[in-house]
Length: 612
Image 1 (cartoon, one colour):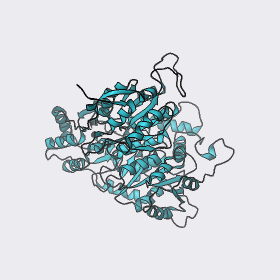
Image 2 (cartoon, helix red, strand yellow):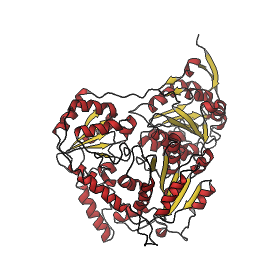
Image 3 (tube, helix red, strand yellow):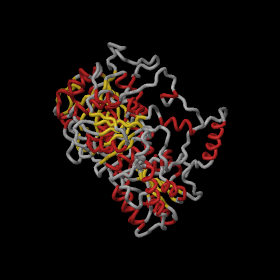
């Protein structure tokens, strides 16, 4: 007879999660972020209190941003470990939708456990319940369906017996990895059930390395042997596979230069002579020149986002062929690419063995040297004589670069800095973290905390603009409470400077982005230093880039977050690199500048290619 143990469904969920292990003997779900409400406090809250440190609970300030911290943790851990996040029903649940979409786009594991309505329906409609007039089974949590990899509603306690293993199988699947939502009916959380004792035996989750098909390897090897100007695009899949060193060895052995996407940057140190920087819209001049001439583009672990491909106008060689090495057939066959489905590390090893000592023809190494000379120029500190000069974002990056160490990880998500960092930041190996799949304003502060929790030995420097900081900053308090130190470099350009520049580039008038161009009675003068101090952080204002450098060094000895505010010039871009980006221009109307923008748009759009 099967032995059973009587637990509430919430107690069963927490007990089961506490014994799901990695191969290294750690919990796969390290702990759970929680903001309690009527939909989860009595059931799941009681269970989390009861289980204690066997599955730690951490209090957040906002459902979305505590989920951002969880996502940044999983990204830093290369998807080998993850966090769970719970909220009540209603606004607590829907606050997490944005974070779920961010995790889905970036293929990152996080377990969402929002409270849900009563399965028994006796008190319906309950507080915060969404009612669909035509479908009695719908709740607010159905909004998760398009933005998670797996969705389930726990409407009976025994549902956990199948739902939980399915959830972890998705989160640990290298091809289908992504967020999971288990919408947990609030009455069911408290309902008791006799669960089999064996259900709570510890289980080790191994992350597979799918082997490639030999025929696909041979197809790609044939293309590489025939190529005169091949280039590799290194994506986030290289990092998740742990293929950094294998990729570096592959490029050197076969004499193929590579470029790095936002998700893949930092797989190799910038000093690597085969590393030509970033491609596409925020690409280095030397990388884009390689890509324009390439007759074979080899994607490794990339989904070929439009910034990477210059909206598919970057690869100008008429003879160009496309290869995609990826875990998922969906990505591997994009744009008519020759697919090579498999784990990046294993696939590159097998491909290299088949290529043997084959080397591609020589490439232009001098262009890379010239590019780094340009980077040094545009990131140099302003002349001391320019007393009223506000630094550009490039000069702020230069200040941080000059005091960075091998332990420094820079991170960002939205605004000007992601593009500027991709094209200008000279990253140490493992020194870059960018959320640019969803480019979510508000990820930055919470994400910096998640990175530091995952990598406490690293120095985490968060670049954030005043616009993103205004959207979400409350997890500073969480970091203060938990003594999680990181440094925030807050560039204040008094508005949404990045989109303002894009608005101008597209022929529009400056409108509703900078405070000065908005319909307001009074221009705000926000005391960001005072605000950060009020949440417990150490906060200062830097007088100039030299002062910024000094304050970053000083921050290294603190046990709480440091916020350094510096006024910046909203007008200049990166000052180097770049490529066209497909942002539509109105086809009719407008002044002469709009007509000129439309003409530029049509010229660039003519270079786009629909498929491989």
